[in-house]
Image 1 (cartoon, one colour):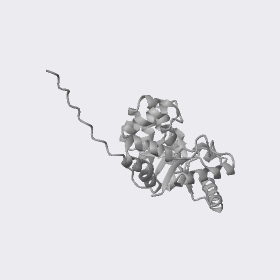
Image 2: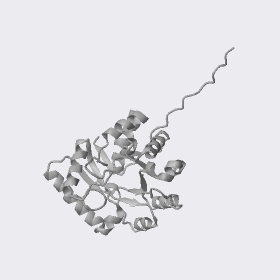
Image 3: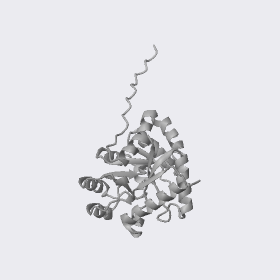
Image 4: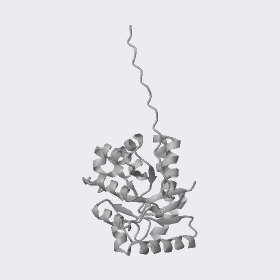
Length: 259
């Protein structure tokens, strides 16, 4: 199964990803060399709207794919957007204007890194009522979730998809993000891994192989396959995803006292 990276800021000159086409093409080469075959480009929603909306984004990606093919890079770039979860997003979803991941019903959203709005659960629920499934980006980097992982547990119980960033497992976003990622994984609160790449390197490149090796050490081969291959593929094809199977708890027997 080809590797899909569902969260990546690869398009040039649209948000805080690469500014120049040359850097974006270099990013694509890095991703392809690392084993990724399909990247869903996810520029920030506000910048997408400022630069022409859905149709302009589709055209931008088509031109970028043409450049990739011209230089022989074995990578396909698909359409997506990363939205900040707020009340304005609900209006976009209600009007049918949300740009989903590769045309699926999955919508990539992020929560403010420092504030956890009191409308998060209701907003997620409203999106689901409208027929969309929210995919929450990098919850391990959200300060409130780091302190209170049960907030994410409640969302996951209600059908929200959880996506952690590979760099978090490698300590690229600090000790707290790494600790949170590991905790969420051990609690089976993560559905998929993505790069959230922003540059060809060295900072935030679109690579996943090293993070996948770290993931395997944490959760094992079967869960790693699910989070890094099967679920990203499923989302990109608008299929249902699943969580890793809970591991049976090891029974602890009381220590016998000495006579």
